[in-house]
Image 1 (cartoon, one colour):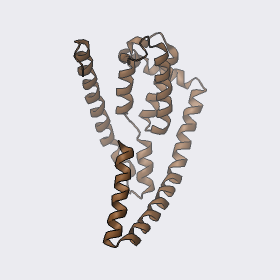
Image 2: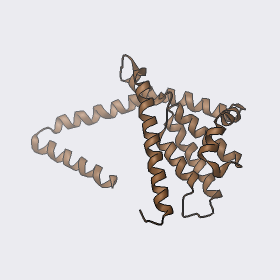
Image 3: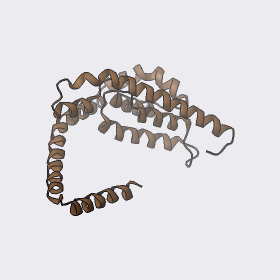
Length: 197
């Protein structure tokens, strides 16, 4: 769908600029936005490298095992199907930690790895398990304690207090997690009754 929407917007923008005589303004905006995108990428690169490096170091030490043990009660509660699978628990823990730290770039590959491992244990390959559905809910809600990426973006754009959004991020992500979990439970109960969604 997006591969149709974006080209349509681009064509409309160029058409309007030509017919309204603002082609020079459009060209200037294009070059300015590309320059801003490169600058923002370099500003974020340091933060991303730092936290991804920390996650890699944590993964090669006993820290991940300690964090997995810390999160074990939550993982047991949310993912009862994988109580015996330590590897999947570790991968889910890494994903949750990355999300808590606001590291979406690090959380995505970790989440994909966890889903791949859960799919290997899935007996019905064409149907998601409850654990996989719950993991999608938690991963997309992305409960964050330290929204690192957002703070870095605000800092790069000259915000006087880039960390002022932290409390509001907590509220928004917790509300998103609760709402998604309720939707998941509702869809699951409807599915169990044999109603097609």
